[in-house]
Length: 252
Image 1 (cartoon, rainbow, N blue to C red):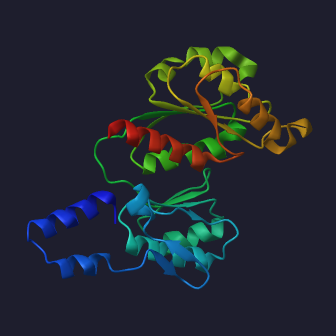
Image 2 (cartoon, one colour; image 1 turned 30 degrees about the horizontal axis):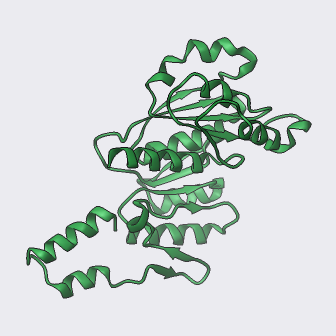
Image 3 (cartoon, rainbow, N blue to C red; image 1 turned 60 degrees about the vertical axis):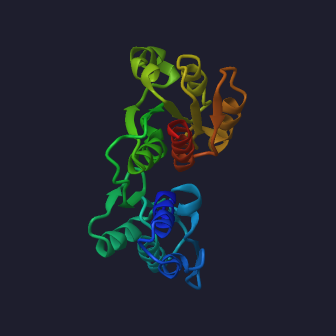
């Protein structure tokens, strides 16, 4: 149940359309759904406007399918499974024929936002093709949540003219997500060009001294450009969620 649905339910009680007992019937289930192997936070949608995402990596296929089925039954908002192994994606598509599998982003979108008006414009920028799994994770999650997304791929600082040629989109953006590995310098470049909030995502892309993304993480954290926040290494999902919260607050 989303916050808007809870408000509508209370208004209907106030207007006498339904009884208090009928409203209690709609609200009576506990906020935790115990599946034995997982305890689902089914009231997260009511608190935050978004159902709990399903992190599929490390889970048995049948566990992910069971969590997805119960989440679909108990919520009405977007339902997203992240870091989905191929076999699990196949099982989810069999169980939910309307679901969409995004192989590069390692996502299965079980149910997307049905809203008509986009929440705002998010520009997702990546430094190189090797960063695509993380940048696509951010882009696809944002699209599933009703955000308009534009992509700027392969515009790393080794060829600075590439991002400068494509910077018009940065000036139109409400939020920008920058995804980069190696030394992570692209976040500072973009942060110096746009007036929009920038969410930087370091990736584990790079040679030995990049330390699986630690060098990019530290570079982004110590950026001299103002207005940059930094997510954890390879966390495109977290960047999309941060952008969603920014855009929701702006529209309230």
